Structure formats: C-alpha cells, structure tokens
Length: 178
Image (cartoon, rainbow, N blue to C red; front, side, top):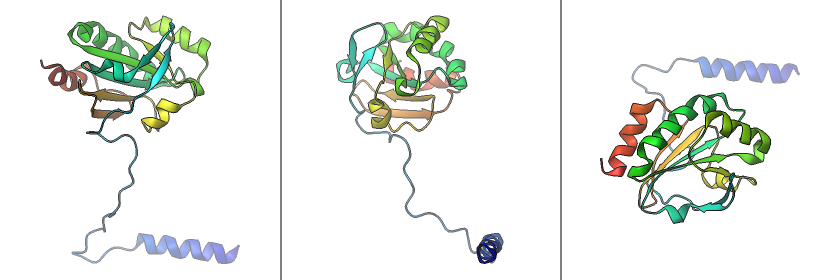
C-alpha cells in the first residue's frame, strides 16, 4: 500500500513540474477519433417507424436529412424538440427531412409514445431497438444531430444540444440551395 502511494505521489509530482521556457506542451500525434466523421457517406439503415412501417435512409437520397438521436430520459433532448418540430414545419416542403431516432434499446416504448404526443412531433420517429444505428453513427451521447446532404454525405455532426434556430438554419439553408 505504501509503495503504491509513493508511486502515485511521484507521478503527481512529475505531472506538476513546469516545462522549461520555450518548450511547448507536446501534442498528441495520433488523436482518438470519437463520433462520426464528416465528408463520408452516411451509414445506411432501415428502422421501424413508431407509427408503423419502416424507413431506409437510402430512400431519402435527393433530400437534405437531419438525423436526431435522442431518448426520453435526456433533458437536453426535451429542450431541443420544439426547435426541431418548428424547423421541420418550416423547411419540410423545401426538401428537408427530419428523422428522430430514439435509442429504444435504452428507452421504454410507452415513454417514447408519451414523449412524441407531449411535443406533438410532426416528423417520423424511428425506433433503434437493437442499437444498430447508434453503433453505425458512433453515438456516444444524446442528443446528437447529423446533417446529411442530398447526395447522402455527412455534412455536420453536433453532439449535445443544438445552439438555436439560427445555427441550424446556417447549416440547412445552403444544403437546400437557399
């Protein structure tokens, strides 16, 4: 036990040492990649809709797609849903499709239905029962929003709550050709 404490204190002392002047902090040469990379084809999926039927991402080619990964127990997800509903109402006729992908493998289906009713969500809600889409998109936190071009390329990924209407519109308007 005493040896472990001494090693720990030694490592702490080493970590707290000041670097000599002119020597910058070394950079990590191999960054760890977390989340989905932009500029790549969006991973295809086929998921069940809450209201019946299925949706395949590849069938939406030609539309700008916003995927929003969410869960009922996520506070920030609740906070951004009214914004997403309004964006859908304002831009759907211009070629924007929003798909709300519920992490159903981590959620309760009855709660999902209540959530959708509470927020009167106008866009399709997809159920990721087995976490396949979650893994394909490398989701490590919710909400996560993925913007996909008409050609099916990942354009932008936002981990965490969206910054507001203006931020979303700055992304979708050029993709829609507006």
